[in-house]
Length: 213
Image 1: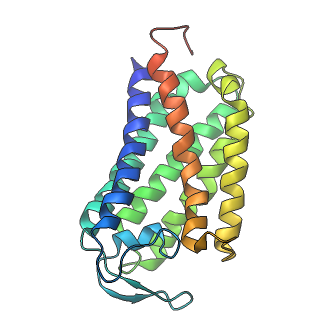
Image 2: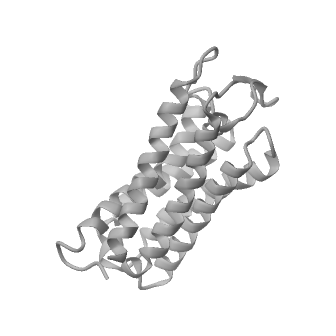
Image 3: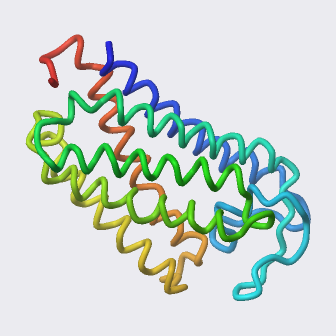
């Protein structure tokens, strides 16, 4: 039961986060929202205007309350899913690091949602750093895990972790590699959601197949 609840939490976190990125972005008008130009955080800004002196861009998100609510909700679901999945991910230190890192990344989303970038930039940036660093560290730790679930996902974990880490370094360095700085931020952020989706599907199937813990 715990495994299935964990899987459901992770799948719901992914679905809500991706849906909000699309739907809230579609609500933008003059300017339109660009996944290449705009950061994910721009969807949650509460005021309209030119934002970010280091990379100026027009920001006006009519549905920012919805985006910030999803930041908080998805963060809580990520953390809850990790805590529920702990038994399926253990034994070993790698599993403990994976769980703790996903909880930290989830708390980063909660912090970012409660403190939009144009309201409290310092706390928002802290939340973003928790998403970037522990979020991708979780995947690299998972690649070293010894449980049946983590062994099954070892290659996927390593590839996604390296992709997210590279995306984080390039995003923070403002290197767009032809996909825009906003696009590079998504390379840094989306691997965690891809991983919890893969793990969540396996956890949901665990009752009907061999145990994962």
